[in-house]
Length: 354
Image (cartoon, rainbow, N blue to C red; front, side):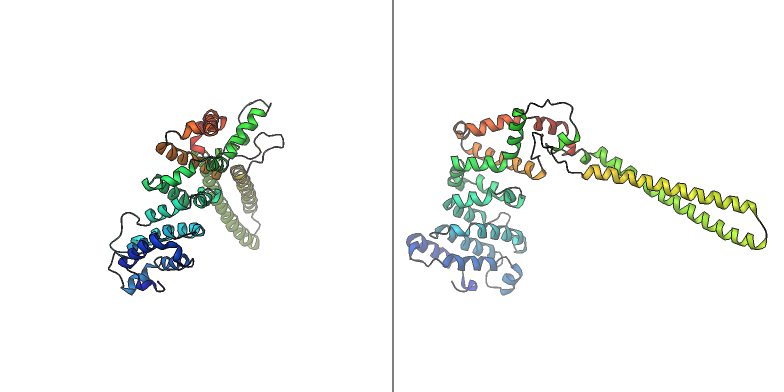
């Protein structure tokens, strides 16, 4: 086991059977050594160049190493390392030929996470991970697997349900509660109130077209100004030549007119640039809630993504356990609020601005 080049499928299967029978006899550093071997397979060029295994067997060997972690005692500390290693192994999987169509690493990862449900749920139910498709897609796929019943059962527990509500739905539910407790009338919707629900009116195609028209207008006026400057330069040279020869009042008049045209073109261009800058500032302006506003923490792109992922997780749990919703009234109540919420209504009306 000290050298990854000595590992074969037969050896790893034998070690798996031995661990199943005598897991307590093995040193705790075995997990660290196996993890070190797994990292070698994230560098396919080196593995293939070594020509140790039959082409196409390299991912199977890595999966067999992976499978040993579910048999190790007291191995909860490897959750983060194994999840990240899985992502890295799947990223380089197409470079092994012939390429596996289905990842061979998710089944052993699922078996491992089933033994360490608390650590697994704590790892994935973090805002920065659940809002990242790289982690959220992996977690949802693991939850859907047939062998993930223990993990789904733990996720359906009271502790995980509270964690899920806090991570995925805390902000939209807080906005709804603030609106219910606020005596302020609804009134007319503004950019500020829409931004509180994650709606940016400047993301709409019409607003983008408006900005594009102003950009084109700036280019046209800049071109026009360049032409006028060239005309002024030519007239200045002509005036210098004419003044050395004889007095030419017509040339002086034309030169003054050209200078006035240049000044007008400059003012027009600057005015258009100011208008464009104003439009950009409105497009990028981040609305800060007033002190008396019921929405102290407006919805952001991250908050909307977390809410979406929360819905998907609950959907998976419901599809495998029909008793999930009857056992969790707080989830039902929260979803009813979200369904009837003002934010959902506004987002439906402004889908193109999301």
